[in-house]
Length: 272
Length: 99
Image (cartoon, rainbow over all chains, first blue to last red; front, side, top):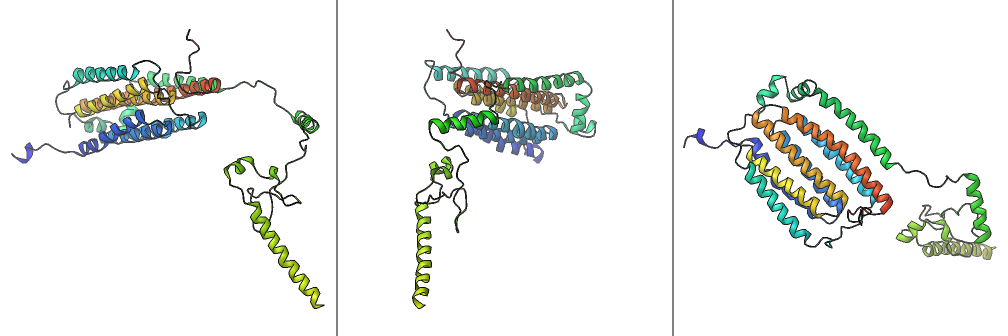
């Protein structure tokens, strides 16, 4: 066998055999993970790998667009909405349609067989490669620009209409009309006085957090004159998480310091 | 390198995306599976662009990305609207049209 007969292993091939299994794994993760955030991260992983494949297939422009638009914009939009609607709602595993999984599996195998048998082996011959097409206009970006602003200019203009419609549509859909009038200063004051009259809630501001020699964070509860904690002085969220500073410890420090000071004072008085 | 390998990869990704659409109840995950199917189609177009040595496939991929961006914006807005009224993103809970 002469060296010319050896199959030529190109960089594109190496990239493909590294990226393709990872992409399939990522795609499976997208479907199989129960938590939606993991699915979204798997999807982002697949898209980054796809960008590498584009780069290997002589498409540097699409490589950049794939990373910026898909991974950067679209997936982050997905994650944003995921955070907005609550990430902790797990998918239910109960089948609502009887035998849905089985039917889905059959449909998937059928689809796979249909496409593979349909297109598998239909393409013969070595790829032409884009070296010539890319060089014709002086580069990949210039070549694509020549097509977009030349032959496909009407489609390109139409996408602007599409994008503006999508933006307006999203604003209309996401807009929530106010059901009740916004409470102004007058109404808020009335509410506070009404609460004071009915439940005895203090109408003034809440007590500030405790300020001590060693602690002055918002997690420090203020102490009432009798040494107990003023519950309203720390945020209820912090109190629920147990993130507040222990007031009894503060009490002990204060008590210890006070005892030391009185001891010195008493000693001085005794000397006199 | 023959374009066949890319086609088989794209087919696998497309079918996995289809499975996701069929099986997952979370609207967001189903939507992401649709995106995966779009990406698989993009891969085919770029691969054929390389096979035949012209840039039309890459331009097509570019347009698909534009349409996908618009689709995602509107789709996510719809999901947020449904979530606001029904407090759920499960596609099973949107059943007001059911008898």
